[in-house]
Image (tube, rainbow over all chains, first blue to last red; front, side):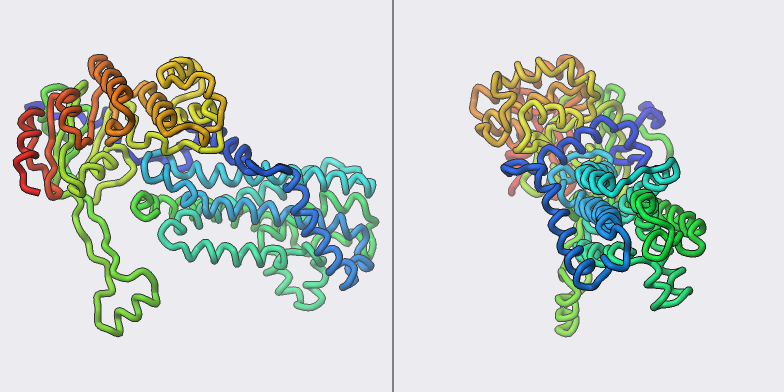
Length: 290
Length: 253
């Protein structure tokens, strides 16, 4: 009898997590394309829905908050302010929601074949970004109508804001997707977070109102939310160049904003790490539980 | 755990299954509420375990074609899932060498709303192929499947036979060193089955290692040289295919 040198062998199903995704990038592009290609199959209006749905929601918010509650009178270029923050939160909701259900949604594959399962939440997040692009296009049109001429800092803020959203949505999505396979409760919990997201950030109102009504300490806590930081960066990018620096216009970032940008990036990255660890822990029983 | 293993197959093994045990949970309650109700009635709240596989060991040599036989629920498919990496063993070790492709998942990655062409690319990529490899194989895949012009139609409009042919064609055109086959040979009409068997034989002759799960004794006797009988979650017999078939015919259900 001869003994076997095990160093030449692989252990099936033991991937390297996110590091493996680089090797599977071709499949990743196909999965993203599949998501976007099948999204509006069998619908006559197709991608028009990607423009119609956010616009309808936007007009409801504008009518209620802007006109009825009078935000439109207190804030210059309120429609632009509202829309810039609104689609940022929409991007988060879409990416986070899709990522959460991505593993369960690919049940057939997860049960029958081994591939790095991290691909599914990544593809879901990337797909949400593709879906975000039409909304970004509308925002650009609206911004140009208001005479938007961005500087390099504004563009940088927009990129940073979207990056933060992508990372936090992916990190949370990875965490939730893993747990969701065994405990479907988490999907409902995610829905609660998504419902809160719009209200927990200065989308419909300005951060000054938080300071006014809740005080400095609460404002500091409030600003620790990475989505809030991203929304403010988007306001800086799209809304600030169109308004004057006075009351009702751009009055500067909330105090300690630089600190909060750092906190937002750290929290987002921490969620990616926690998400990956949890995901791997649950992954071992995906094929049984899904 | 020792870092070396004794070789039991004649040739260098491509698949090693070493003392593998797989445990499944049998839940007695399905929610907090149910758990609480059972608890007040003094019924069992915690999950039971049962072993789908107990201490299973075998090695498959490179280029060998081996059948896994057994009754329904004996643990055949679980064995294959362990080798493909879909499931992880609770005890013991599994090792593989080279690229593994599973016909277990024939059609698993197919999306009905996509065209045949898109599905070929998607599924070949799922099985681990790179873009240039698929480009090179694409014509062969279509030719073997006999789909012809329908390749650009959406898969949902395919007949089940066309669907099977295309899915199977993708799987066998992956340059695999090890092929895992689960029951796919029992579908389709006689000419298609015949064609599949011919292709499988061709692959074995080319040196592809094969692990086949099937209830069709004729097919496995035709394709395999060795049979492993799994009965009640344990290896009952491991040896020449004709004897393995005899063992399973004589085993009381």
